[in-house]
Image 1 (cartoon, rainbow, N blue to C red):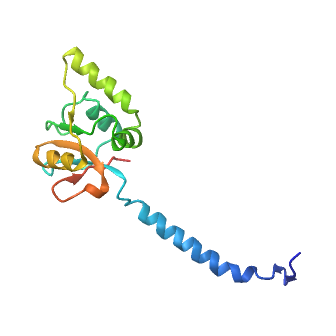
Image 2 (cartoon, rainbow, N blue to C red; image 1 turned 180 degrees about the vertical axis):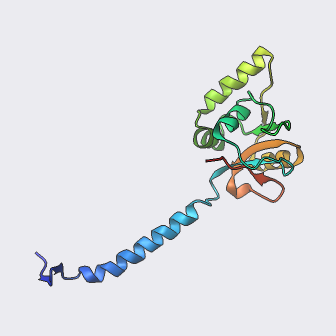
Image 3 (tube, rainbow, N blue to C red; image 1 turned 120 degrees about the vertical axis):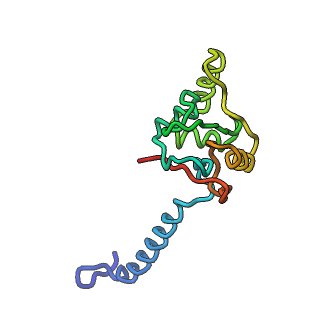
Length: 157
């Protein structure tokens, strides 16, 4: 049993500074975590005059049920292939749906003749290029691929 001194365990007072340093390091790591280059974000053409999207609106746009931005501007959707890991992360974390649910929605609008599937591109740099060159363009990428040719489209809280 450790010896007690003045109601505290001896040596505990030496651990306190170490714990404080550890906590400070953890908080520093967590604050940088929000800007992880592997975070998946939505991007839009710079001329899009919408600043945020609700999760429901983003889900409707990516499911191809809504063909315009909330302000009425036409939207062109760009996505990665269904089996791409970033597509799965985007679907699950930002839209709260599984990739196969998006595929079912796309098939429904295509086969019913009421719409078309989104534009599928193979790589994230291609999504950036297409969104940047298409008025009303919308897509998603990992934050590390972001450049000045597009703007981030955050989800509203």
